[in-house]
Each structure stands twice: as C-alpha cells, then as structure tokens.
Amino acid sequence: MSESLSAATAFFVGHGGDEIEAYLARPAGEGSRGGVVVIHHMPGYDRSTKEIVRRFAELGYDAVCPNLYWREAPGAAPDDAAATARANGGVPDERLIGDVAGAAGYLRSLPTSNGKVGVIGYCSGGRQSVLAACNLDLDAAVDCYGAFVTGTPPEGFPLKVTNLVDQLTNLRCPLLGLFGKEDSHPSPEQVAELDEILTADHKPHEFHSYDDAGHAFFAVDRPAYRVAAANDGWERITTFYSEHLGG
Amino acid sequence: MCTYATVQTALDGSAKGPGGSWFHVTDGTIYFDHPVHAMAEHTLNIDFADPTKGPSARVALELTAASARSLIAAIETALDSAPAELTD
Image 1 (cartoon, each protein chain N blue to C red):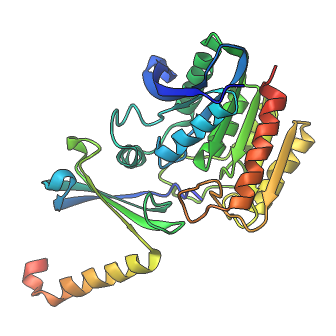
Image 2 (image 1 turned 180 degrees about the vertical axis):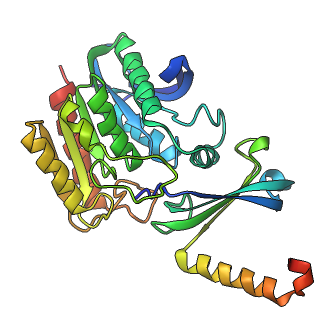
C-alpha cells in the first residue's frame, strides 16, 4: 500500500439540508476501502483533530471530519468557533445525527468506497459517536471516553445534554470503547453500567480501560496525554476497523 | 471530562482583542472545562465577547482554579478599595 495521501477541505450536505465544511483525507490510489467519520471534541475542528483524520488515511481509510460549528462560525479560528458554539448552547443531538449522516453518505459516494463506514469521537464526540451509531446505519463505532452515555448530567446544565441509556437498544453496529480508569466522566462505574446494558441486550462491544490514564489520554497536545494508553488504543482501533470496515 | 457547564452574563466594558484593536464587550461566557492552551486538564475559562462582531471579537482567558479564585478576590479588593459612590 502506498504511503501517499491527500487532505483537503470538502463540503457536503448535513442536517437540515445545510452545506457544511469538512476536512477530508484520503489514501492515494484507487482500490476499494472503508470510510471513517471523525467527530471532533468540544474544543473544535482543530489541528490535532485534523491530524487524527490524516492518520486514518494513512491507515488506509477515506476519512472525514465535519466542522460541527460551521453554522455558527464559518471560517472562524477553531477556538473562536468553539466559544461561539458553546455560548449558543452547543450542538443539538438531532443536528449531530444529521451531520454524521451527511458525512457517511459523502464517504459512501466516493468512487473508492466499499460501502462501509465507521465513526469515532473523542470526549464529547465519544458520546456523539454512540449517539450516531444508535440512529444511523454505520458499520463500526468507537467511543473514546465520552461522558454521559450513561450517568446523569447534573441539574442545571445549560447545555442540554442527556444520557443515551434509552437509545442503546437501537445500537446498530459493534462498539469499541476506550476509557481511562482515572477518569471521573465517564467514571469506571459508568463504563461498567454501559458494559452491563450492552451485554444484557446482546450488543457486540469491546471495552478497554487503561491504568494511569484519565480523560483525553489520546490528546498529544495536552497534559492528559498518556503514551502507553494512546499507543495501545490506536492498536485496538486499527484492529477493530480492519475487522469491521475492511473488504 | 467535558463539563458542558456554561454560565453567561451580560457585560458592559471594553477589551483589547484581535489585531490590537479595542472593542465593546457585551457578553461574558464562563465555564470550567478543558483549556485550549493552558497546561492544565481543566481551567476556569472566560470569554469576553461581542457576538455582533463575529466569533473573533473575543478575548479568552484560561485560569487554573486557584488563580481564578485569586482573581475574584483581587477584583473584590480593588472594588472595595474605591469610594463606594464610584462603584455603585
């Protein structure tokens, strides 16, 4: 396989028929391959997220990250866009689902697509990855330490986030969960609750919780970065997607 | 974690923002969550903004919890040190 890849800004139609910006990275060459939708974390459509998108292209997938804040702040710096989106109350779940649906459809429309699309999200995007997998026809989902998949948000949260417990029965694809044992959101107890719910419902899933890792251990530009957990996590993701998005 | 918690308040003042230009501040958004730049897992973040001028009309602060509390105390000390008739 060639190590060459290309990356560019793309546009596709997301929720409500809105055209939104996205970052697209693709391996060179024709062939047939799976696609990955990367859901950025709450700080936005930033450099570190785009590096993740390129890594999936390097792994052999067509990968795209929709700019979830495009409507509030088109063309703004990622941190300014994130601040604007937060001040406006965050990304509604319905809109997230529509935007991921647009991203998945865009990937499947590429001439290189094998029809299979996975989703992955970090932090708030971890919850959104599970949300998308409960509502859309996807082939594999990865939740990296998403809070409030289970558990109850404190009262008075200005951002209207709810847990996904009542949606988990609709999970349509295998789920890989990667968590830090020192994280409090999601806590080990909340991860165990999610594991129990999915096991009881016969939903295929695979969870890994790492010692000496808290929240955001994949984030190479933050103090939370934990190299051992991140390296093993990338190995798990690579194997999981190879199994479910290959062919 | 992403705390999601966000507190907003109306403000009336000015800030020196992008490009070294001053702008009128109308809104403050305050939240305790991941910073963009500070070397801490969580910080008290304040955005001083004028939303009518677009997303870049913003001065951002990311403070550790201890320094945020220190700032609150310093602001109160400064206000209390001024004649009451000036700060009512």
